[in-house]
Image (tube, each protein chain N blue to C red):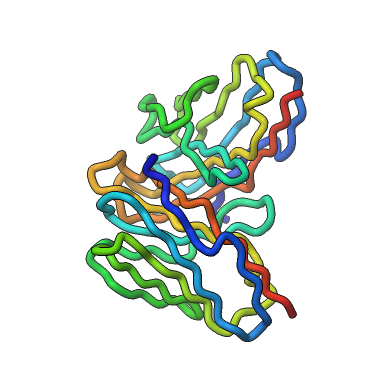
Length: 113
Length: 114
């Protein structure tokens, strides 16, 4: 299976703390994306990092990509209760079907107020 | 407002009764796809379409059909639903055929087949 893996599967932190989630994947990629899903609802795109980029920022989000280790991390700084959600990484594989996203299994983040 | 709209949001049906889940996007996107989400398995692609009248199988196409007669619509058809198709379904669209684009997701359809 091409599916990626994320860890931890679940993470519980206090408001104001930082949350770090990791994603590993299996083959060469064009890009890696992170999505957020509030309970049972649609996925919302957070950030996209291309295979030739190593780090990217968007507001309180910081994403890193290490193609040699086939891994990425998502850091949410100064977390808020509203950040409580599931977070998924998704990859577009090099040479794969255009725009086909391969999703990881997700990290469930709970931010306690 | 730019969006992907799925209907219905919730559906309970019986085994073997044909059903259609509709998906419509108002962003003039070429690329559309269907995913199913199951606990512990993440999201898996069922079918995708790169343009009108162009569709292809994803990773888990068995038991599903799709059509793309118009650019904005991409319905998912279950000809004879079975309990193992009980799942949360998402439709998604992307702006172009380029690889470095984000996907826009609908709100999901929770299907239960009894």
